[in-house]
Amino acid sequence: MNEHPDATPPSSEMPPESPVAAPAPAVQEPAPPGTAPDEGIITIDDFAKIDLRVALVLAVERVPKTDKLLKLELDLGTETRKIVSGIANFYEPDQLVGKRIVIVANLKPAKLRGVESRGMLLAAGGRGEGEALGLLTMDKEIPPGTRVS
Image (cartoon, rainbow, N blue to C red; front, top):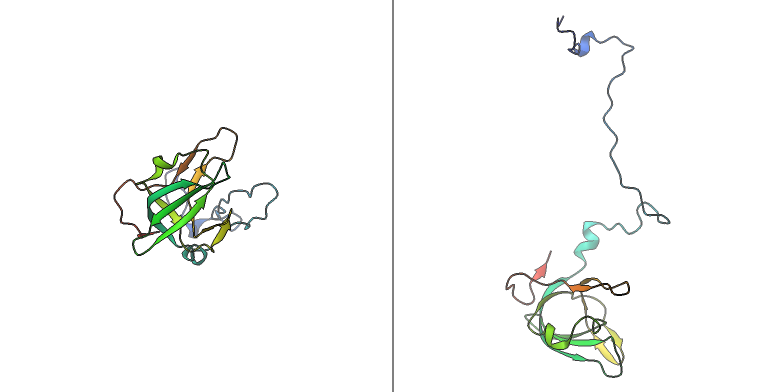
């Protein structure tokens, strides 16, 4: 038997009534109020369905008769396409030309003010009054059309 007073006896020497340490339960973040625990959770297979691509902004113009919409012409490597986005309150057209942004390339096309938009650019912020908005851009010269993963 171990003579050190603080040492734990080997399992064969533990009395039967001694509790055995159970593994700690996994810590799970609580779901936000009003949501089911798995609501909004996607699988890796769901994520794989989203085709995120690098796009080079070739030209930008305001959509007539709107205050919020810009029409961007994008180079996707193998094609050019247009995307309409509600970012005119945050960017002037000339600020965007030449930027490499991230877009959802396989989004179902939609018509916005009569202009077909074939994708969606990714941005953060801009929801609240006076809140800044930032586009997801590349910090290196990644070729247009490169898949983002």
